[in-house]
Image (cartoon, rainbow, N blue to C red; front, side, top):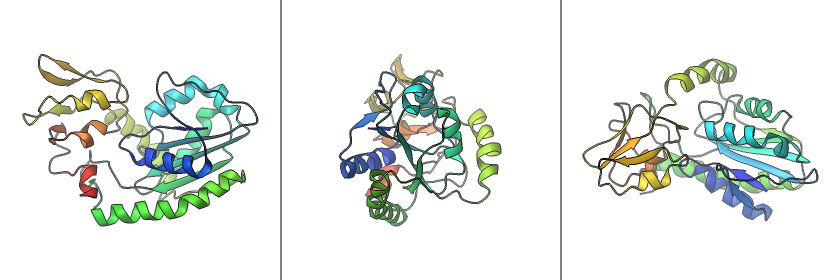
Length: 247
């Protein structure tokens, strides 16, 4: 079984191909997803690294199903990231209450655009990351199939600082829907409402609004808007969308 969360599609891309290589079943991490796991099972957790740690939705899922997930005979994770992952696996192990048997990180196109200097990758860089990941996935699948104990990750420079100092600050000030707004370019297609994984967007008085209740910072609404009508304050001004990488 492979449980996955994907904000803008990178981790779903990896989970689907890994599931195909392993002939394994995929289950999306949602509020109503169940975890049925015996001690004989191999179980995978696939998700994107957010700020060198876990997305809120992944933390909530693990908290709800901690006992069942930790019961797996072989427990592994595959994390996608734009560049590096810091010590996100340590955060995951602590949340699970057990050591992971195997940890892998795979680079995928960058989608974080909410700080100065952060933008989507060029098409050439995005394509190179995808091709590198596709080439590596059979090796990852073989390690999982043989239940190899392995850590194959890119931690990056100053990983402890990123995970344990910068990440808490980032989560405190930037994992919020307070800065999101729909501009006059909004056509009220409601795609953002339908696609939000936490159902945190709604229509009020013929306007798209964020409910200030539950946001994991995945930016799915921003990247999937067909009219580029969603902004995150002034941070996303003149920034690209993920779809730009594939045009």
